[in-house]
Image (cartoon, rainbow, N blue to C red; front, side):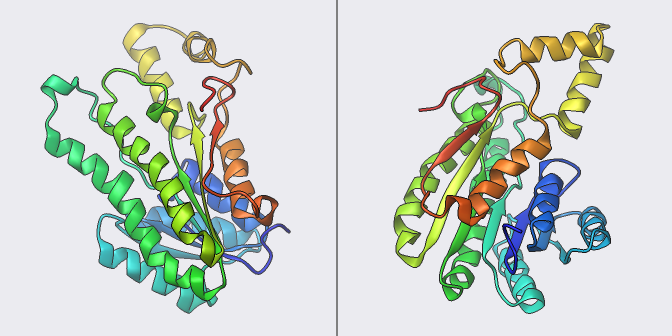
Length: 260
């Protein structure tokens, strides 16, 4: 097992990538703290992990609240004895308006979750990672920060800030043995994209095959990367397979965009 005797905390655990990540880490032996706003949702994922023989703790957490971030870390440490891995998966999407019409207070709300929430949870984790002699922090980023589309300004800008934060934190925390990296997905096949496909079918009267073909036209591998495969990239950064890698952002998008 790649993560035997390790303790991880994953934020943004819902039905999508957060859940897939938590399950992948647990499969490889990690005890997992599950943090998200909806207690019922995180508890259901914790129950899945326990049913497969793993250890999990569900923690109702709003990453926008710094006290919640500190409390989540304390709960994981109290339950499992420490923290070795943090995966920042919580996010808020873009309102979808052109910049000229946008309510910038809504931009702030996107930044509150995607930037400040991630950084607050990371700052709460650092003392516990230092106490273990090091560890791994993984940010879930987005191709939106590199392949710019209209009406995604707040989301793209927030994720762009995290791309720089990864390198800054990697530089500062490297002497403590703490690695900081990010995965950069594009389209992710899971509940959110399924909802998008269903919406397109309803709005345009097209088939799911047609919608998916439109999406995959720009993806050289020819399919939408499943959330479970994105979770495997996160697992790579969480594990000692990447013990000499820090400050990196890995594109995990089927080749749709080749980052610099």
